[in-house]
Image (cartoon, rainbow, N blue to C red; front, side, top):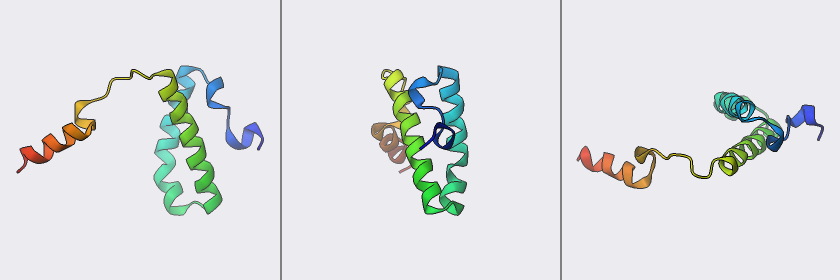
Length: 81
């Protein structure tokens, strides 16, 4: 598919452009899921996956919040018990 149909390949985006693309695609995800055609949802999913994979490739040591881990989630549920 043409670049204008799928966007700039993630590996060609500058870091700030990549973050802006990720923010935009996450912002539109719910609406695409609920109201997009099957093709639109497949395209959205493919693009989102490619952008996220590129972000993780560039930032393999990104900081993970303890509350966003399984252990942290278990601690939250145990605290409320």
